[in-house]
Image (cartoon, rainbow, N blue to C red):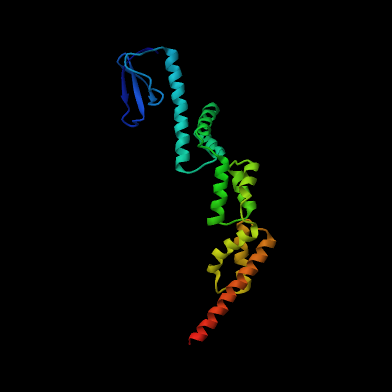
Length: 221
Protein backbone atom coordinates (compact mmCIF):
# COMPACT_ATOMS: atom_id res chain seq x y z
CA UNK A 1 0.00 0.00 0.00
CA UNK A 2 1.31 3.39 -1.01
CA UNK A 3 -0.09 6.57 -2.52
CA UNK A 4 -0.59 10.32 -2.32
CA UNK A 5 -2.47 11.89 0.57
CA UNK A 6 -5.68 13.44 -0.75
CA UNK A 7 -7.40 14.15 2.59
CA UNK A 8 -6.68 14.24 6.33
CA UNK A 9 -9.90 14.18 8.38
CA UNK A 10 -10.53 14.28 12.12
CA UNK A 11 -12.31 11.13 13.29
CA UNK A 12 -15.83 11.70 14.64
CA UNK A 13 -15.54 9.26 17.53
CA UNK A 14 -12.07 10.38 18.56
CA UNK A 15 -11.02 13.91 17.57
CA UNK A 16 -7.48 13.15 18.76
CA UNK A 17 -7.10 10.83 15.77
CA UNK A 18 -7.19 11.54 12.05
CA UNK A 19 -8.09 9.40 9.05
CA UNK A 20 -5.68 9.44 6.12
CA UNK A 21 -7.00 9.07 2.58
CA UNK A 22 -4.65 7.98 -0.17
CA UNK A 23 -5.66 8.61 -3.78
CA UNK A 24 -9.23 9.38 -2.71
CA UNK A 25 -9.79 6.34 -0.47
CA UNK A 26 -9.47 5.74 3.29
CA UNK A 27 -6.12 4.10 4.02
CA UNK A 28 -5.43 4.19 7.77
CA UNK A 29 -5.83 6.22 10.95
CA UNK A 30 -3.22 7.72 13.27
CA UNK A 31 -3.12 9.98 16.32
CA UNK A 32 -2.81 13.70 15.65
CA UNK A 33 0.61 13.72 17.31
CA UNK A 34 1.99 11.03 15.02
CA UNK A 35 0.42 12.50 11.91
CA UNK A 36 1.20 16.14 12.70
CA UNK A 37 3.81 16.42 9.92
CA UNK A 38 1.56 14.95 7.21
CA UNK A 39 -0.14 17.17 4.63
CA UNK A 40 -2.28 16.77 1.56
CA UNK A 41 -0.10 16.10 -1.47
CA UNK A 42 2.56 14.07 0.38
CA UNK A 43 3.40 10.77 -1.24
CA UNK A 44 3.79 7.90 1.23
CA UNK A 45 5.69 4.74 0.44
CA UNK A 46 4.75 1.39 1.93
CA UNK A 47 7.72 1.63 4.32
CA UNK A 48 6.71 5.12 5.49
CA UNK A 49 3.17 3.94 6.17
CA UNK A 50 4.50 0.99 8.14
CA UNK A 51 6.64 3.32 10.30
CA UNK A 52 3.66 5.65 10.87
CA UNK A 53 1.47 2.77 12.00
CA UNK A 54 4.17 1.47 14.33
CA UNK A 55 4.61 4.93 15.88
CA UNK A 56 0.85 5.21 16.23
CA UNK A 57 0.62 1.86 18.01
CA UNK A 58 3.31 3.04 20.47
CA UNK A 59 1.46 6.32 20.99
CA UNK A 60 -1.76 4.45 21.83
CA UNK A 61 0.07 2.58 24.61
CA UNK A 62 1.62 5.80 25.92
CA UNK A 63 -1.77 7.54 26.02
CA UNK A 64 -3.21 4.57 27.91
CA UNK A 65 -0.38 4.85 30.44
CA UNK A 66 -1.11 8.57 30.83
CA UNK A 67 -4.76 7.80 31.51
CA UNK A 68 -3.72 5.38 34.25
CA UNK A 69 -1.65 7.95 36.16
CA UNK A 70 -4.20 10.71 35.58
CA UNK A 71 -6.75 8.53 37.36
CA UNK A 72 -4.51 8.15 40.42
CA UNK A 73 -0.79 7.98 41.24
CA UNK A 74 0.71 4.62 40.32
CA UNK A 75 4.08 2.92 40.60
CA UNK A 76 6.02 1.74 37.57
CA UNK A 77 5.14 -1.84 38.47
CA UNK A 78 1.41 -1.05 38.59
CA UNK A 79 1.53 0.71 35.22
CA UNK A 80 3.37 -2.20 33.63
CA UNK A 81 0.87 -4.71 35.04
CA UNK A 82 -2.11 -2.73 33.72
CA UNK A 83 -0.56 -2.48 30.27
CA UNK A 84 0.30 -6.19 30.26
CA UNK A 85 -3.38 -6.91 31.02
CA UNK A 86 -4.25 -4.96 27.86
CA UNK A 87 -1.92 -7.36 25.99
CA UNK A 88 0.44 -4.71 24.67
CA UNK A 89 3.89 -5.94 23.69
CA UNK A 90 6.86 -5.69 26.03
CA UNK A 91 8.60 -3.34 23.60
CA UNK A 92 5.60 -1.00 23.51
CA UNK A 93 5.31 -1.02 27.31
CA UNK A 94 9.04 -0.31 27.73
CA UNK A 95 8.78 2.68 25.40
CA UNK A 96 5.72 4.07 27.21
CA UNK A 97 7.33 3.69 30.64
CA UNK A 98 10.56 5.30 29.44
CA UNK A 99 8.62 8.32 28.12
CA UNK A 100 6.84 8.64 31.47
CA UNK A 101 10.18 8.52 33.27
CA UNK A 102 11.67 11.17 31.00
CA UNK A 103 8.70 13.44 31.80
CA UNK A 104 9.06 12.73 35.56
CA UNK A 105 5.59 11.24 35.58
CA UNK A 106 6.79 8.06 37.28
CA UNK A 107 8.53 8.68 40.61
CA UNK A 108 8.45 5.62 42.82
CA UNK A 109 10.35 7.40 45.62
CA UNK A 110 7.76 10.18 45.76
CA UNK A 111 4.94 7.63 45.59
CA UNK A 112 6.40 5.73 48.55
CA UNK A 113 6.73 8.89 50.68
CA UNK A 114 3.16 9.93 49.86
CA UNK A 115 1.89 6.44 50.68
CA UNK A 116 3.59 6.45 54.09
CA UNK A 117 2.31 9.95 54.91
CA UNK A 118 -1.22 9.03 53.87
CA UNK A 119 -1.24 5.85 55.92
CA UNK A 120 0.16 7.59 59.00
CA UNK A 121 -2.33 10.44 58.87
CA UNK A 122 -5.50 8.71 57.73
CA UNK A 123 -5.19 4.96 58.25
CA UNK A 124 -2.41 4.24 60.80
CA UNK A 125 -0.89 0.77 60.62
CA UNK A 126 2.41 -0.88 61.44
CA UNK A 127 5.58 -0.02 59.56
CA UNK A 128 5.83 -3.72 58.66
CA UNK A 129 2.41 -3.68 57.00
CA UNK A 130 3.16 -0.44 55.17
CA UNK A 131 6.38 -1.98 53.90
CA UNK A 132 4.46 -5.04 52.69
CA UNK A 133 1.93 -2.83 50.87
CA UNK A 134 4.69 -0.93 49.06
CA UNK A 135 6.52 -4.15 48.11
CA UNK A 136 3.25 -5.44 46.68
CA UNK A 137 3.14 -2.32 44.50
CA UNK A 138 6.62 -3.07 43.19
CA UNK A 139 8.57 -0.43 45.13
CA UNK A 140 12.26 -1.25 45.63
CA UNK A 141 13.40 -2.05 49.19
CA UNK A 142 15.80 0.91 49.38
CA UNK A 143 13.00 3.32 48.44
CA UNK A 144 10.71 1.77 51.06
CA UNK A 145 13.39 2.12 53.75
CA UNK A 146 13.95 5.76 52.81
CA UNK A 147 10.22 6.53 52.90
CA UNK A 148 9.83 4.93 56.33
CA UNK A 149 12.70 6.89 57.89
CA UNK A 150 10.43 9.81 58.83
CA UNK A 151 7.50 7.62 59.85
CA UNK A 152 6.26 7.44 63.44
CA UNK A 153 7.30 4.34 65.38
CA UNK A 154 4.84 1.48 65.86
CA UNK A 155 3.87 2.43 69.40
CA UNK A 156 2.67 5.85 68.24
CA UNK A 157 1.00 4.49 65.12
CA UNK A 158 -0.79 1.81 67.16
CA UNK A 159 -2.05 4.42 69.63
CA UNK A 160 -3.36 6.63 66.81
CA UNK A 161 -5.13 3.69 65.15
CA UNK A 162 -6.58 2.41 68.44
CA UNK A 163 -7.69 5.84 69.59
CA UNK A 164 -9.78 6.26 66.44
CA UNK A 165 -11.44 2.85 66.77
CA UNK A 166 -11.81 2.54 70.54
CA UNK A 167 -14.65 5.09 70.77
CA UNK A 168 -16.88 2.51 69.10
CA UNK A 169 -16.15 0.13 71.95
CA UNK A 170 -17.11 2.44 74.81
CA UNK A 171 -19.22 0.69 77.43
CA UNK A 172 -17.85 -2.80 76.81
CA UNK A 173 -16.29 -4.75 79.65
CA UNK A 174 -12.52 -5.25 79.73
CA UNK A 175 -12.39 -8.75 78.20
CA UNK A 176 -14.56 -7.87 75.20
CA UNK A 177 -12.86 -4.50 74.78
CA UNK A 178 -9.41 -6.11 74.80
CA UNK A 179 -10.45 -8.81 72.33
CA UNK A 180 -12.06 -6.45 69.82
CA UNK A 181 -9.43 -3.72 69.96
CA UNK A 182 -6.62 -6.28 69.93
CA UNK A 183 -8.05 -7.94 66.81
CA UNK A 184 -8.37 -4.56 65.13
CA UNK A 185 -4.72 -3.71 65.79
CA UNK A 186 -3.61 -7.16 64.66
CA UNK A 187 -5.32 -6.54 61.31
CA UNK A 188 -3.31 -3.32 61.11
CA UNK A 189 -0.12 -5.38 61.35
CA UNK A 190 1.01 -4.61 64.92
CA UNK A 191 2.85 -7.21 66.99
CA UNK A 192 1.58 -8.82 70.19
CA UNK A 193 3.64 -6.68 72.57
CA UNK A 194 2.65 -3.40 70.95
CA UNK A 195 -1.01 -4.45 70.93
CA UNK A 196 -1.04 -5.33 74.65
CA UNK A 197 0.58 -2.06 75.71
CA UNK A 198 -1.68 0.00 73.45
CA UNK A 199 -4.93 -1.69 74.51
CA UNK A 200 -4.08 -1.22 78.20
CA UNK A 201 -3.16 2.43 77.66
CA UNK A 202 -6.36 3.20 75.77
CA UNK A 203 -8.48 1.36 78.36
CA UNK A 204 -6.96 3.35 81.22
CA UNK A 205 -7.39 6.66 79.42
CA UNK A 206 -11.02 5.95 78.54
CA UNK A 207 -11.85 4.92 82.09
CA UNK A 208 -10.06 7.97 83.48
CA UNK A 209 -12.14 10.15 81.20
CA UNK A 210 -15.24 8.37 82.47
CA UNK A 211 -14.32 8.99 86.09
CA UNK A 212 -13.61 12.66 85.47
CA UNK A 213 -16.88 13.04 83.59
CA UNK A 214 -18.74 11.38 86.48
CA UNK A 215 -17.14 13.70 89.04
CA UNK A 216 -18.07 16.72 86.93
CA UNK A 217 -21.69 15.61 86.77
CA UNK A 218 -21.79 15.13 90.56
CA UNK A 219 -20.46 18.63 91.09
CA UNK A 220 -23.06 20.12 88.78
CA UNK A 221 -25.97 18.53 90.63
